[in-house]
Image (cartoon, rainbow, N blue to C red; front, side, top):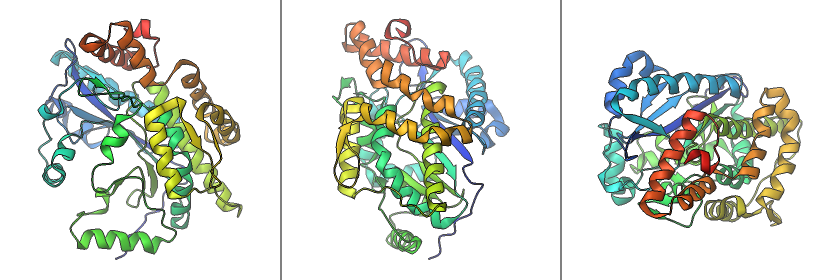
Length: 385
């Protein structure tokens, strides 16, 4: 088969932010997304807000923008509109990779054939997908660049996973992981880390095989952590857990934006791009999901290792000139704040401990996540609680 790639403006950017709807009083998940969409009307549905897999979820979407700040401004407009609609419903928006204590078996799937197929095929793993993420699209002007950029982005899966990790709790228990979402989502048949194809024809053969055997009905059902999005002309990065505030979302988006542009420039200059064997990539993802900011990550194909928080400053220095060109220097630099003040999973655990743990602690975590959504930036555990 032919998998057409529609080239787009180089390093254009688009963001998709999945958010949970929670009760303003109890913090439990609310199944009110259909009512929210009806109240928003067709214009909002067509542009900035969309339904998702579960009825407790909405996805806020930016337009195609030239800069990360522009895309964030779009998201903030959508966020404000949704908050206006849900306020009379006594509902709030919560951003995280998972809900701390919601029973997954009680969540309702959106009435759409595509989603019903997921549950029917994956059964318990499909029903357990009470997870929330951020999807980042960066435009690529030449199809020949897509797969090399994708392979190089895999070198930095651990950075993105650890910095965004926000799902330490699952089904009212501390999992011991920084990102439970990362491991839950990869249980779906076509989810997880991508194959490292070197030729576009290999991707086309894979897609044809998946279609022929009924694994997928179209390419969008290939749910890799990083994938080409041929119909948009982008590389789509889906590694990150859901974020609780626009400041951290902007920083993570800036990292992805700069990495794609950096690798694109290396290709233009005929210079080699970094790659890593698939077994190292898989290990890095697991380490980042398990240990978060405390992960010792594999840096390169030679198997050199370093504490993630020691490796990150070097990466940020390397990308600083790229960030200046792309207009996201301040956003990229704020990733240092996550190192200094803790990623979301660390803040959540601190809030839970400050409130005695158990159910009371997890209810406090939901309140803290809602508070960060309203504040637009991370809060200290005492302020968030």
